[in-house]
Length: 367
Image (cartoon, rainbow, N blue to C red):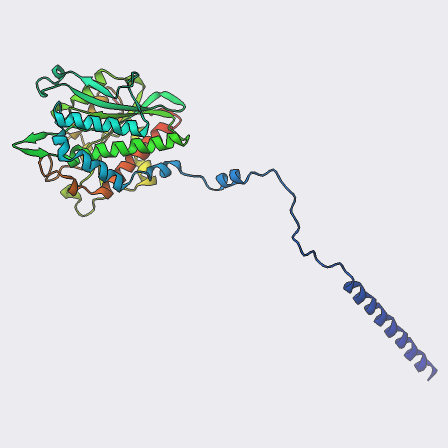
């Protein structure tokens, strides 16, 4: 009995002690400091948010400026160049002179310099040079954008602006041949100038060659190659644009294409770069049908790029093939596919951009 009483007293003491301890712990919890009502400012660092942003997302400058080449702008240019006002732009005649003035004014308004050191955009070609195929002297229009790092190396982008003039009172407006290439060239020039104004100009210099006399026998580009404003030995490439606003019957089912001629004739590196550029940016079907040495059309020898190729300068000829309005008065602006013209012009721009900004000059590895 005594032992039972002692056991009960012991249990009572332990219970009181535990209750007091729990009460003290709860009191301690209730007296903890409350959380701050304002956020804690993290310690400052020397990080540059702008730099971090650039590192996280690389801006594709080529795409930024290529997107300035638009269907609307191309259409305005082409409708002007292929209008009756220009009278078919035949070499040496009034319409060609008007077209030359229009192109000169376009470059002036863009702020792109003349290639000639005296500030004259016109490269004069005497009438005798045409061997009776022109009734008067004529002019190439040549503009120039100086490179930022390799200014003594030159990327030429060319298109002929002449056509067939007036025959039997019909004006041959030459919308596709080659107001399309000329419009593309002018838009490409504007895209490069935008980049230059933003401090992102090409490393190599760009020559914008608007050739005359192509329809009479490639005379304008031949004259330039024989009287170069800049040394041919420092000319890296010629990207020539001749008829890029239509499609031929072979591609009627899928006109998202362009014929490429000559890319691999002198430089495998140029061909590989061209392929990679198209895959990266435009994804057009690249058709090499007319690049075949045995092709009876021999287009490789029939446009202005050839006068560069024969001087061992790598070239690409961009072409949409022959259609039912080729060299007819029915080659008019309303038949141009401006969506195709835009995409092809952008491909030329992207290719020129890659060549102009790469570290090493294109290797000529074929003869």
